[in-house]
Length: 290
Image (tube, rainbow, N blue to C red; front, top):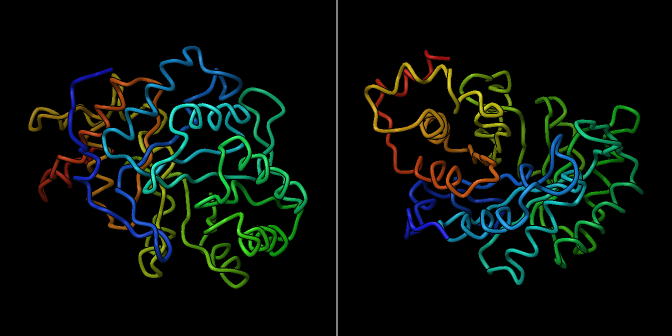
């Protein structure tokens, strides 16, 4: 086990309230990387995957985002192996609504019976009685949104789900869903280089919703060689990945970044971002670099 960090630095990024009664540290962990190539099948190093999840919790991460489509279910099984029985303060979010015919192939299926089936399988694979946050992974254009969100509401009424979120939606779709049932979160593609969902973020701020930016490091493009943030590094004791995450934490109090990785070393690098306080000048420099 790595000894590079010995405390719980994820807490340094502050906290967010999810719904009425769940408080989470503002740097979470996205579990999509706990899979094989094309986000399909088992990871190349299952033991390292288990170590990553355990180390995340040791470092103070208490929000883990997964989905039935990751693997499918590979990430769920690894999370259960690593952490079950779960700590009382650990919040596990998952998603339903995408089916996986093969590697890198994602297709929306929003039929209520499918959403219910996948929710039941999530509960089984994760070893949960109630899912803290169940998100509609994508809206299926072939099924009325009211029917898709309505089924998630039925699952909540049955005690199988605590809170409901949406993923990759517009403000209009978010408002339409909120007319059916309370929504506590939205998960859209968002990072310093990709801000097309800025209007959704501002809506989330105004209405007390949590915004979970997926691909906060742009699939590694903001973290690796050639990152546009390399130009900002000379004035900071940080990596490009840390600057990108620190920017998100500074940009909006509603943001809950969930960087994913299959490496303990990269995990620790990401978590260290919570200790970086960007000045106004540095924040603007990171913004302008992208």
